[in-house]
Structure formats: structure tokens, C-alpha cells
Length: 180
Length: 149
Figure (cartoon, rainbow over the protein chains, first blue to last red):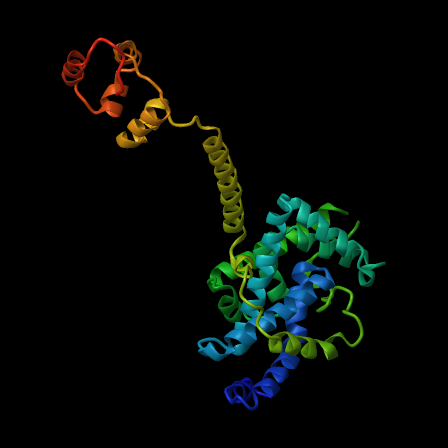
């Protein structure tokens, strides 16, 4: 179902629940994996994914369609992830590296990476990036999102995003080659 | 020689981590719908959770400090000395004082009156509400023997 149809249906009080259910089914996988790659842990990703859709429900009525529904939902998910990681650091008074170490430990324990040394090192290298740069890298590398859409999601210029991705890729290659 | 790692040559895994539990995406819409349909929490202290963490911390600190200052102030008030004797005496109406002295056969001698200003200069002014000249005039008019005030 097209976004426009979902939005039109959502405006009808009698069809609102059905429309929202369709919206969740359409975007849940993308939102979950976008969040999961940022917070690594499934339970955290589950909580945050639900929080994202609760926020979508609350604000969808006021959605002005300046951006596409897809990038608007991604933007909410992105803000939730960044807030979660920032509050995690504040909550436990941990320096940057300790949260990174905690996430790296979760990556090492991930069963799907067992036996794939290069992929494991790639995931650990990605975790060495600052949160916002990691987000840019994930959107471009994994989701293959066009820079223009990334600019809508992050509120950053296309040029800055290209530079950020380029530096992130170099850092990752440098990290992996340095750990050989 | 080992080939250096190059990101664009590495096979991309769109979902690099372990997949969520079975049926997760089947159940997620239902769980989200349950959350959005749940009744709003009753207002109480739930607004606290909406505040940013630094503001919550500042608020908690203020409450603790306020409680400490309040308890300190109350305990200080309890330990404060009672009003001074002249103040207490000054608060007693003059006619009640005279009635008390007459009824209880308490006698005030000229010596007492003569010593009174030396002990506390404020007392005759506040208690007797008479100038020293007026007091002297009354004393001169009295016989030398003790008299009621």
C-alpha cells in the first residue's frame, strides 16, 4: 500500500487503527534493523522500535508531508537511537570508550558473526566511529539510502554527509588493516 | 602477502547481526497497537519522567536541600530562647498587674522601686509607662512607710 493511501486512511477515524497497523507492517523491518545496528542489542532495539512507532502514532496527524513518510519515520528512529545512546552514557557516567566496549562485547557474542573474522572486525570497526558518523555510515553502506534522503533524515547537508561517509570508510579500513 | 581490506570489495551483509526471534515481526504490530491503545497514565508525578535528566537532578537536589534547611530552621526555632522578662512583663496589661499585686498581697517597697531602674532601664519605661519625673513625683507624695502600688 502506498504511503498516501495509508495517510488518507489514517485521517478517517473509523479506519485509523487499520491504517496504522499497515504502516507498522510496512516499515517495521527497516526501522528495527536501523535501530538494531545502532544499539546492537535486540531487547534495546525492540523497545526503541516500539517507541518509534508510538511516536509516529502520536504525531502522524500533524505530519505535514514536507518530507516523505519514509524519511520522517527514519528521522524519528534516528533521534531515538541517538538519545538512547546519549542517555546510556549519562546514566552510567561512562566515557565514550566504555559504551563502545559494551557494544563491541555484544557484537563479539553475536552468533551470526561466529567464524566470520573479517565481518566481526568490520562490525567492531564500525563501533569505533562516533554515533552520528556511524549512523551516516549505516544509512549509506547498509540501507544504500541516497544522500538527499540522508540529508532529510539527519538534517545535514549532502556535502557534509559525503565527507562524513568517506572519512568513516577510511577509518574502518585503517582499523581493520591495523588489526591484522 | 596479505591483501589489504577494502570496504567496497567486501561482500555486504544487509543485516549483519543475528536475526530477532521467530515471529518477532509477526507480533510487533500487535504489541505496538496495544501500546497506542493503552489508556493514558493518570496524572501524578508522571510529568517527572518527561523532564530532562539534568532538570530532574536539579529538582531532586533542591527538594533535598529545602528539606534540610527547613528541618534546620524548625529545630533552631524550637531551641530559640523565650522572650525576655521585660518583654513578657510589658505584654501584661497594667490593670491586671495591679490587681495581681493587690490580690496576692505582694508588696512593692520604695527600695524595690529605687533599685528597679538600676537593674533594667527599659522596664520602668515599658512596664510602668511613666517618666522618671512622674515616678519621682509619686514617690515624693507617698508616706515613708511601704504602700501598695
